[in-house]
Amino acid sequence: MRKLVEIVLGPLPPTLLILPLVAGGLVGNIIALFAIAGDPGFGNGNQANALGGVFWQIVTGLCVMAGLFALWLVVLVDARTIGSNRVTFAATVTALGLGAFQAVRWLQIVISHDPGYPLTTKLLWILAAAGPVLVAAGSVPRLVRAVRQGDT
Image 1 (tube, rainbow, N blue to C red):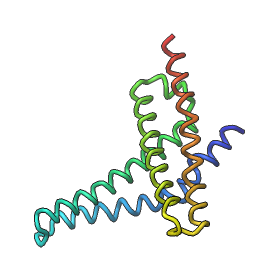
Image 2 (image 1 turned 90 degrees about the vertical axis):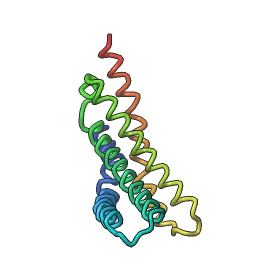
Image 3 (image 1 turned 180 degrees about the horizontal axis):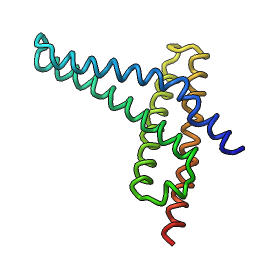
């Protein structure tokens, strides 16, 4: 039952609500990156600024996807299995941290831009992002305990 609750509160909402948007945004940003890089009409400073902005959006999208993948991993795979390999453990905890950072950052943007977003939009984003952050935060101590138990 706990696993089902973790799935419903954790990775399921962002998989259904956020992943399609992030994936579409990544495709569009990768196309924009090549279009900007190949456009001789840009001045050097303008091209660098545009490339930097698009590159940052790509990095942000990849952080979200890595965090979501790690969230599914910690919900579906036993903590001892993840903790038994230090590289898998480090990658999982890092991806969870990156994903949680992006989720909290986005929640801060949505909530603080009042009256920019209607209440229903704010509630939708809270549903899609707050639960996964809490599940991720709760899974890290389990992973750490699994690593410590494996060391003894």
